[in-house]
Length: 532
Image 1 (cartoon, rainbow, N blue to C red):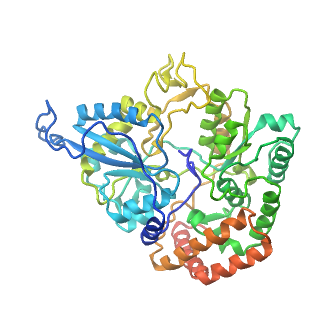
Image 2: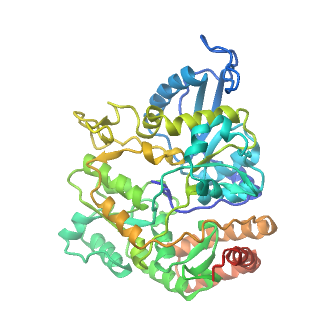
Image 3: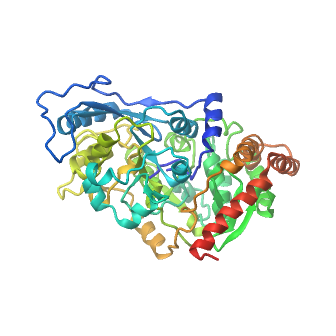
């Protein structure tokens, strides 16, 4: 997937619909819309369009679909979308207005889309974006009977076990992608600076600290983790201690480790958390990140390219893409990558439902959306355009027909060049995926490493409906933002006093009731699956 933010990105799970409405009303999310080359709402048949053949879906009525993807558009998305809409209008008498949530406030925007009943025909869905909860709440349309008719090729190509991950209460509510992968957290870093400064090889938390300290002391004008450093610190905490957190960063409830799934705690009350926040206070005091990091909207990766940053959170596929891009825009920079799997020497594959497309209950044209998705996933011309951009502008095809070259052969690019990359994770289909010539050489070795130490994904399939504790969940989330995040980032005067305050605020918010609820739900799942 991600360069997901978490995803690249990180695993972040929204609040309940009610909480989402409150959040959206107080702040709101931004939407960047790709330009559509078709007027909205046209309903007359396109020129040359004939009435539907008996037994085939009727496309005689011209429609404009509204789709949403997570993240941000590429500067050239309007151009790509214009080409796609030409193809769609010819083949399916359809156009798509493609919207993006943007990464800033994406949770509020996503929640509001589903809670408000806005007319949306399809959107990205994921286990880490609370797909199972929303499906139980009736936010998505049941696709079980529609798929064989309106997405017949996809219906046949997706394995049964993958459909099972998109099934809630015996009904299919999404179309999962078909592109198995490992997406653990990790850090991209300036390897050339590590070598230049004779810093230790990064292999554990102590060597990460030594690296950040060495860069800060020896590279004038550099903030080791520039911009917004929350992802780097939060995922480091989670994976270093092997906490398996239920509900992402909007929760504090976690199993203490993969090997002890039934040992479920509120992690701010653990000795590990106390140890970590005290350490992060020393990191903040030494200037490993800026004091305004929690309000910054600057990506740490952009500062690496600018020469003023050294470290950037990425999941493994996102790291591969970022390292490849930097090798072309900043060939003088040498980057390395440390996956957090090496803290405990195991990797977990993503669920198929980690990246999917779903149809909201409010959709006006679900049948046509499924037809477009079927074409997008399975037609190589459609897939390449929307996944890799325009041939000759964003990439060129190598002689083998299976490898792309970016930037296109013969094209010279500046440091502001960006590989065409939008949140295409939801429709990825492995047979149509193309390799990138000159891609990061370390990616194959990493995937082999992950496969060799793979463990079953026993946590992501757990589904919870937080409705019985929605008030406590919302209150706890507010406490996390107000007290927990500054504490974890070391942005407090006295970490011991701040920790005491944080714990008392969590208690007052109802964290104990939330903990008991999660224990009950998780253990019921473990009982069902025979997990000890």
